Image (cartoon, rainbow, N blue to C red; front, top):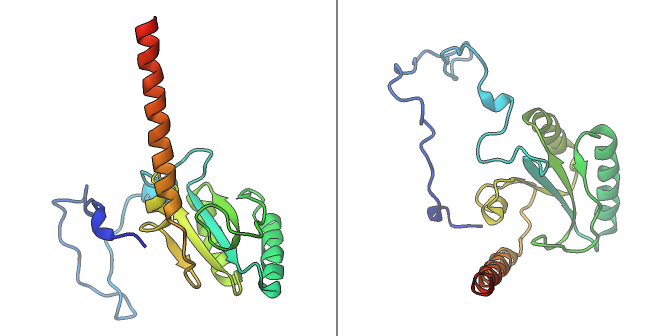
Length: 191
């Protein structure tokens, strides 16, 4: 898990300054508070909040894990994968990996979610139907390491991730950019 102190968190009340105090009245259950009505639903009902991707990559990835050496879990994962494909054809569902891949240290398959409505339908369904499997739900914001750690939500037991891959990816990207910049400089001097 990442260190939360590494990040900056904007105030959740940004844009809600100088409003009247919230009421202290309780609902009929005597426990929950009455909230002031809004004229319309919050925009997050219709689109993912910034910086979550709204592109073809998808707003959220769901990685559903199983222990590849456990025949019962492998069979359950295969059945769950089929059911998801049949019940949620609008989601992007990838192949079942029977070994670790990327930062994922055990076998898994991935499901991509594109809209808040899909998220609202699929995630509660998965909570009930994931059986013995664990799932990592993370946004896609362009910061892969933070998305897989500080911004991630787990269902079931947390599976250790190989976070070193993100460091290696950053180093490879920096190397590539340096080579490209060097080529540009060489072309300038030759041209």
